[in-house]
Image (cartoon, rainbow, N blue to C red; front, side, top):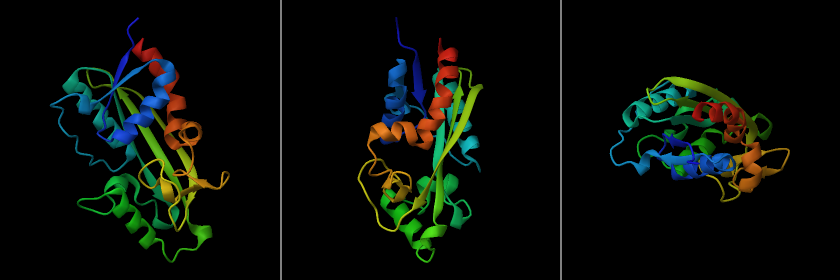
Length: 201
């Protein structure tokens, strides 16, 4: 039996790998827009994670005529009124990198005491059918705290600074096995799997 295919509307290789790992037990073949030569870049100009996820899913599905997962996620820091939010990947501006984004985040929090450094990661996922119609959406969060020095080299983005208090470990220190059950993305995909399988069958 042929595996059902799903295209991930993301050029982030680490995010694609994380999504592949989450879907692997369910025998869904995961492709990426980078597996195709001419998929146009989607401008993520929505003011919410939901808007960006839906736009990525819809535009990519229409172009490729297949089922597409659009996912947008990011960090929301309480003391920064929810920033960087939808700007998480480009928080430091033109030419943003994980290192530059983290440096800006830590600089903005330098005078904020530890007890006020609460934050959450949020993931919003949208599934579009080959016509570009959104058929399924889910959203989930994971609460934590921003520490002052990076710890761990796993993950990506702000992970080395995002501490899970119950584990006394950052996302950068957690194993991928633990993160697959604990993270905002893992929690969103737990809600996504059963209805997604129903759609793809």
